[in-house]
Image (cartoon, rainbow, N blue to C red; front, side):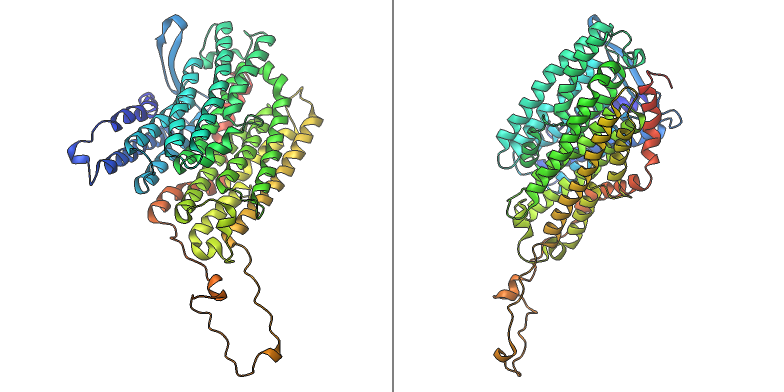
Length: 546
């Protein structure tokens, strides 16, 4: 188990180095580009297989205990250790990261990204995977910061070199926002480590803030929280996200939404909740207020983009929807209750599955039509995707209804549990305020359903076909045959004949089907995930006591 976890974290980094080397003659295939893309599939597949074996070997009877731990000295002068381990909180995020990266590699093998050398692309994706996996596996504050920062440079280059229109500005905005937030976060992490005398996250969680004064905890939560809020993304630190998603390539958008945003919310749960409980208790109402504003703001922005004639971009709309969905995650954390935190962790996984699928689908739409403009995608046929590519339209509708929280699918449970947590927050929190937050979040679910159903109607059904011109009996001779509209040709009948698009291809089924299946399984069997997270959350909130 120790070896497996170390392999999961380190293998992508070694694979990235190998991707930059010339391929051996027997493995080159038809071209060097094909060889390096196949290398990416092989490495990410091996990491996913190791993550699955790690899950099977995990002691599911004791998910609150750190397992597969490695703890060796690294920088003795600062007492920084190579400390790795997983519990019921980090294991689902580890598997989600390995799965999404593998699916992105499969998708890229059959549909290589347009841009510079595939060697650099594969190497950057693997470095990104390694940094994300390390963030969920390390148990030392300094290592956590290094892993947290490790993903920034690969994502910057993926946007700047393989992105679409406006990619340079979007990449700079992404890197500047996240780096500035990380500088403040580092100061908070150093403050905790130096005042507590250790950077070990397990020891700090067991101590539960007893070695830190209230003032130190308040400063630490403020500093670390800003860095985590930027990555989450929490309103009003979210403005880098829509630009980054709009400009990023399909694979970049999937990984950014599916796993990178989870690093921020994971930091709140893993670091701030157990290490600085007094500071979190002070700031929890403010965190909840910002979360609810994000829910309403994201939904209203999506409604504005979805209306006809707004020239709304579908990728940008899904990016704004992430602001709202991650608002539910932050609201659950801000309740400081097991119910709310479990809901936040469940919503993390659900958002990764559903939004990853939606960005895959939007990327496929752009490849087929050359645009993500909602007005262009609706067109005037009255059929749109259901008439042009029915399977693609069906998958898009599935992703949309899963995103709006339809009961029976994964998106429902996390949001419901977060609102249940707000209904009865932790002792000492202002219950009337949290009831207001719950009501506003519930209103946000209605807005979410509104804009997603509008998008489904426009993208999948298109604009209503124009009504035929009325004729009077006197103007039509009794023996005049009806016009033949069975064949597409010039004239009004042809404009109502839907133009077909390539439907879902085989490799797209391979890349998207696991996300669909897991969205259904998580929706129908939520205990599969909650059974892992709940004991670990209970222990975390009780100061390390099982």
